[in-house]
Amino acid sequence: MGVATCNELLSDSARSGRHVLPLLEGSAWSEDSGRSWDGGVTLPVDRNPVGISDTKTKKIGRWLIPLFSRCSTVRWSLSRSVFSVSLPLLTAHFDLKVGDLVLTLPSIVILAGSAALRANERDVAGSGTPPTIALLLVFGFVVRNNSVLLALTGIPFDRALFYHKLFAVVAIFLAAIHGGAYVLARADDEQERDGSSLVTGLVAFAAMIMLFALSLSVVRRRCYEHFVRMHWILFILVLVCALIHGAGFALVGIVPWQIDMIYRVVYRTRIYEQGSLVTMTNEQSNSAESYASVVEVLKKPVRRGIIARDQVSICQLPGNITRIRFPRIRADTGEEFKHKPGQYAFLCIPAFSSLAWHPFSISSSPHEGFVTFHIKAVGDWTNALYEAASESVTDSVVPFDILVDGPYGSLSIDIESPATYSHYVALAAGMGVTPIRSIVNWLHNECYFQRGEGIQRVHFVWSVGDCETIRAFLNKETTVVVDHPTKHAMISYLPGLLRSPMALNEPTDTFFSQIHLTQGVLDVDQQLQKCVWYGSRPATVKILREMGEHAKQSGRFRVAVLVCGPPAMVKDVITATLKLSEELKVQFDVHTQQFAL
Image (tube, rainbow, N blue to C red; front, top):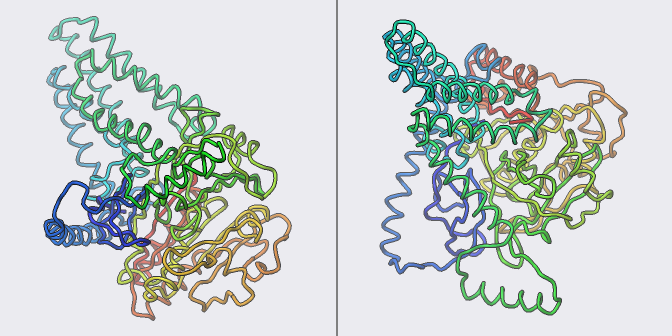
């Protein structure tokens, strides 16, 4: 996954026309359109809270907005030409692109070469500098709200996690070289024995090895709770030993991480759950007083946050799926949860575990009335959540607090630009439909209710193994009405318009959907049978080829491919797009997501 962003300095509320203050991170290279690839909660505030003249504000805006636009153009140009370019074999097998090598390979080569050279010279202290720098990078890449990295390279937190793991392995390797330098120096009598340094070095190295072993996906996914606890314990152990050992410079990387964590855990979750700390306008104050008077009459304690318990609903859906949702805009306070298509958020339920934060894709689109999560029960935490949900599809108020950290993530391709893409293929497998549903519904809203041009073809393909999952996402009783922010109430494409008798779902339509039920019994609503293929798998190569040919006939030479599924599926799609790009002379730009981070 990977999309560029920058702080929204000047933005007008699309709903009220007033300036809004991004209480949470709202970073985008955008003007006052309100679009952003990072989200947050916004509240109307005073136009001039600190007495700055409107003239000065406008001058600053006229200077900054064009600068941000130019930076955005450069960033996306680099993304298409460098950062997001696929590589044969490496991209399909290891999810490595040109940008990954550009950003990491020089650093790794320099650090490894320096460590080896120092070790060969029996310079024990000098050989300890490269692993210290690697540790600093390990800490730096784990900062979730790293808007600078995101803005300059388009690398979001979920992609930075890969670099976090990569440099953790590099740090272990360099630490081993550092240890080898000590052994060689001792053998040549060039190094005095230092008991404390030896012990702290060995303990830190052993802790790093254990961190690596416990972070392997096979261990992490089966024993996630133990992984989280041990990760914290071993992390602290490495920090203490590194400090005593003399690698205090690595702690520099801890500072932004600490600031980020305090912001997320202490401030952001508090804002989401209990409301804003910002002084309200007179209009808001009057509304709040009226609301407070109602609360006083009812004698009910009510929280005012966007995800306060009385705002969040939960229910069970077919296929062992739990749906959590809350209003995107809280009616009584005007607080808004801002997110973009394809993003995800971390959820924590303190009643289950105060340390466990699990990432889940946001399945709703930014224009919909509710922010929605669809969560499959596959482990202890998700099974406990499913059991705690209501047994009917009628939503009930959540019986416990839910903390939200996010949204995070961004697309590695600029689907917002009609000049870049007019043809899209959206591929999903199983629960991988959650971010794809959000993206497809956003594209449909953009096509028919926003820009009204530029999008020529969108082909949605979903491979699923059971009817229950289809019903959970597409049945009438499990869907909700969405709300257009400025015009009128409407129904989203998936499933509302797709279920309509007026929708023929022909391959020549602008939006065409294929749902492949690979096994099980065909038991779906009659309205959905026009888009369900039973007992077959998608002909991915054929679908991509036809889209590429249509784009070429239309005079367009780029196709956006968005895929979310298991690694094998992602690998097949990347391999196919590389071959077709060469064959058709049409560039297939692929954005990939997998089920777990």
